[in-house]
Image: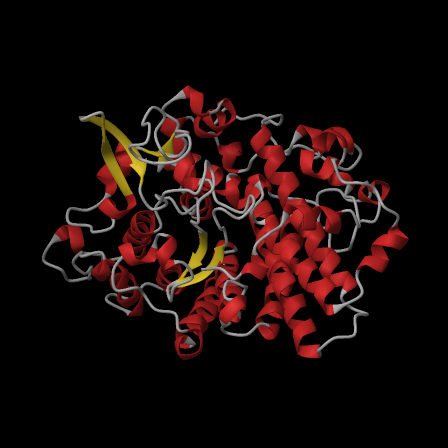
Amino acid sequence: MLASNLIFKMKTIKILFAAGALALMTATGCSEDFLDLAPISQQNANNFYKTPEDMKNALTAVYGSLQYGGQYYSSMHIIGELRSDNTEITNPAAGADQQAVDDFTNVPVTSISSNTWNAHYQGIQAANILIDKIQPIQMDAALKARYIGEAKFLRALMYFNLVRIYGDVPLVTAVINNPQEGYAYGREAADKVYEQIIADLVEAEGALPFAYTGADIGRATKGAAMSLLGKVYLTRKQWTLAAEKLKQVIDAAAQTKYQLRPTYAGIFGAANENNTESIFEVQFKGGSNGEGSPFSNQFAPIGSGTAVVAVGNPLGQNIPTNEMYQSYEAGDLRRDVSMATSYILSGREVKHNYILKYRSTPAANLDSDINWIVLRYADVLLMYAEALNEVGFTADGPAFTFLNQIRTRAGLPALSSTNANPSLRITNQTEFRLAVEKERRSELAFEGHRWFDLVRTGRAIQVLASKGMQAHQALFPIPQSQIDINPALMTQNPGY
């Protein structure tokens, strides 16, 4: 369970964000939370940060931004899953904007684009505040370096999300002290943004510990920075660098303690959070003044009453497709841990797909203990197998070993280059690519990876054309509000 000092407090973050306003989030581009900040002078803001405890609170604010609706509370599973072939909206009452993302009809004024943009830049502003304001603070040098490393890991994660969703985005690494300053920032080339992401992660890796104890469990670790850096290299198609970095994560097992859980079911649920397979999770806590997660309610079918989620409203979002259910191989132990196809209501069976991984009994509506797993060790093993294959296919080589580790836990037979069963035989690089894609879909189902995997591998159009995807929709539209705020420097993605 997460230590209390990492739980995000809305009142605290509002005070911290009052230290600087970002023009990228002003006017119609603001969230309500940002708009209701009481303005204070920059002099008072500077006086706010005086002690190591102030900086600890400032860092908590950066972690807390991950809980925003435009980050891991909603947007990242809407984009990562609903946009893909894994899930869908089956009831229009689940939300028109989510339906638009699902159907590839979203436009620049859709709230999901603007909420995602705003929430990530609020988090980046919080990270920039910590990195800037901690410099003159008299405190333990190692702790200061660690705080900066944590903030840079979080900033890198948020920029990684932004650049994958929108492409070229403003690159802001300094504190914006007043709205006028923000007008100087236009869209920066994605390559430049990736340079900053990589630099932040390299620095974070050098500053962060392999593990924490007690109240600090849940913070970003060296292994988290290394794993995210490996994913960045993979996304950039820098195969050798990806393989090298991911192998470092695997080889550091003695320090990180990362290992596959004995059972797939043992990964998920409040009782299993921050386990040895987990690398980084967004922390939530039900019954803690707004710190709970919404997933148990969000993913329960509309009309299911208390049959799927016992407390709160079932919202019918992120419903697994029938094709997703059929995509699992016979005997795959992960399917029935990940999703169900019916529930019992008033003594009768109702046929309806829904996600099981995040099922719990919330303390109240949208108020569960369930964390969101951003990175876990199985992802690292699959990425390493993919990177090895891209460096060069080797029949029954090491890439097979790491891929088959995942399959073995799932109760599936190993793949090989000489298997007598054609469905288990892989003889070339292309076949191995598709095998990794299929394994990632089953292993990481409903964890926010599928859309990004399809875009990263160039397979999105081929897989999602039947859903209505067009080539330009590999990127989301820049929120129209951002273009209206700063038309001189902000441009729209082609096709919107």
